[in-house]
Image 1 (cartoon, helix red, strand yellow):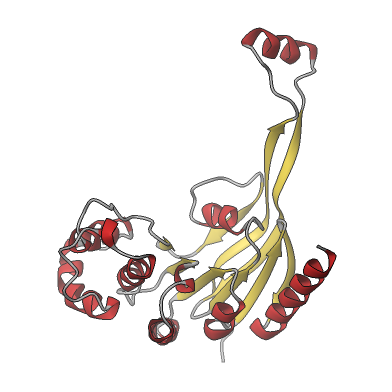
Image 2 (cartoon, rainbow, N blue to C red):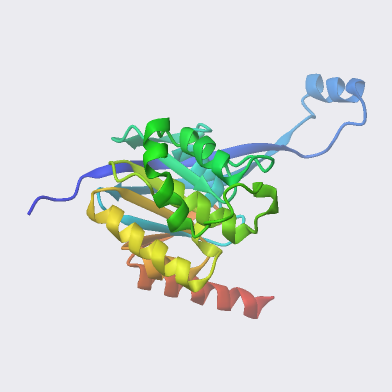
Length: 254
């Protein structure tokens, strides 16, 4: 049996942001500090030496508390920002990043947003027309498609976004950022089944969440990132247990 093919490689990625130590009350004060070398700054290390691969047909989970660096890492993978050090290598042309509410115009109807969001994900209009009935049915939004999205709950928006993103079975990398953390248990089960279908057809799926339940239910492997550092990579059970133990210890110290 051939070894699975890596479709995404995150290689020694680090991200740093300069933060000013003290503010300047005026332009004159700023210039004086600049030329005298007193306008120093400290470095915020958002990510430090992150290294992992995502394989064809794999569902990889990334877990971490809020502010751990998950969102910064996703922006780097999607090509929105360039890392300070390291690089991201992908063999797939399409990387679809789905964040809750991203790509939706709240003043447009749900129907109009299907075509808008689909276009942002790289789908053709003919493909969206063909799959539109399936998208509506999967999202369980029959009777709501002519309403404006601004009147939708977060769960309804999440269902619609997932239904559009998961409509294609063609190879590519699908990244779900906290999308599966909202909605009822029945839709979560249906989403899990759909993710498994995509995996069997060769799509790589990257699920980002702070919920161990989401990672355990969906993923075949997991990475734990905390305060910008990759703490552990392994099975979802091993990683989630370590993450929960860390949370308990942190709670005891508080």
